[in-house]
Amino acid sequence: MDYIHNQLLKLDMDSTLAGYLSIIIMFLLIVLICIIANFITKKVVIRIISKIVKNTKFRWDDMLLERKVFHKLSHIVPAIIIYFFASAFPEPLEYLIQKVAIAYLIIMGLVIISSALNAMNDIYQTYEVSRTKPIKGYIQVVKIVIITLGIILVIANLIGKSPLLLLSGIGALSAVFMLVFKDSLLGLVAGIQLSTNDMVQVGDWIEMPKYGADGDIIDISLNTVKVQNFDKTITMIPSYALISDSFINWRGMQNSGGRRIKRSLFIDKNSISFCTEEMIDNFKNILYLSDYVTHRESEIAEYNTRNKINQSNRVNGRALTNIGVFRAYISNYLRHHPGINQEMTLMVRQLAPTENGLPLEIYAFTNDIQWAVYETVQADIFDHLLAVAPEFGIHLFQNPTGNDFKKITDI
Image (cartoon, rainbow, N blue to C red; front, side, top):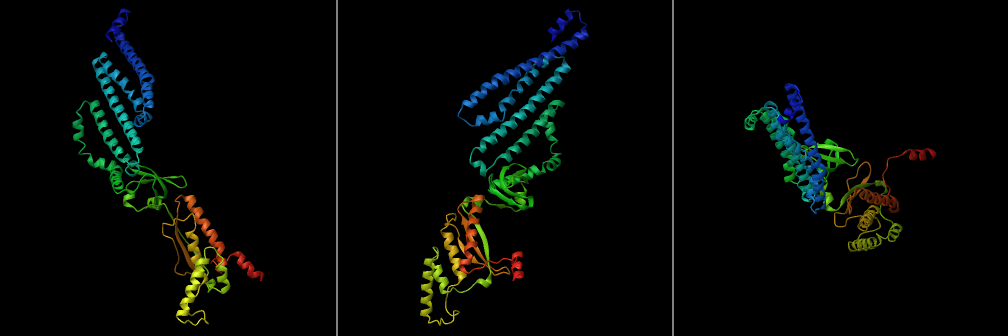
């Protein structure tokens, strides 16, 4: 800068004005050098690095490139130039410029570390273990610590004090930090418990009515768990809520390979009766009943003969009922259905009679856990059962409708 000042004096310029003008020219010159250095770094160096990264077979360097870690490194160059050129300015200005340059270097260092940590999380998520052991929460904790230390370094640099002096005062502010970072601390503890106990993973279907959540987990962070509901809305649940409150995790169902059907047909109790000979002959012509009816008929006849049952009254001894045959038909039908998982529990049972009739419950599992496939299989089964029930003399219960009352009035 002395050279610029002397050149201005040679032009017969006032010494004071030459001093100020030399500072401005020096400042503009430094700015120009910084712009050129930044341009060269971004347009030349970063492009070369990008080409090298894209041509490698490794995935981790691509993550660093996507997170713009290398691009952000280019911002350090101007700060270094400004710091070294600060000595060209007068003493008070030199000190201020160096302080600002160091503060900028620290801030950019924090930005670069933050991007690098994000890239680290992206790299980790490419491994299967990330579904069961996410590290995003821990990375966020590291970020908080690093940013806190960085802020302390910036403040210490600007005021010209030792960072240890500022760190010594943190103990007195611990209560304030506990209040400010309460959610983060609770989230950290919750994240450790969730991960250690394998309570939730990214991709799990959870149901938490208290928070209106019913869908798949798409992200687990330090403070929140992000759930995409089936209507495509997003619900944010505090991480510690998964520890303090109850929720349903459907992962067990997803891993089992079967999805449960648990639904009842309500039978009109007045339609339950013993089977007539005509009904039995008709049942023998039904694919899933012929062997059953023949076997049961033989078994019942043998029992009644062996025990000398007086069959003049059908109450005596054993006999086929339409509800029993219908229940056997449903069971055989399900055992031959291609959409039912035959390796899991399958049964057709009667529940306690109610004012709406006798519940005949189908308890089985589909062999596909996809929602649309599950609903289709379930609907197909009940479409068929609702249609064939009258073939067994079975009437399904239904409250009277307007058409029922109309038929009465027409009579």
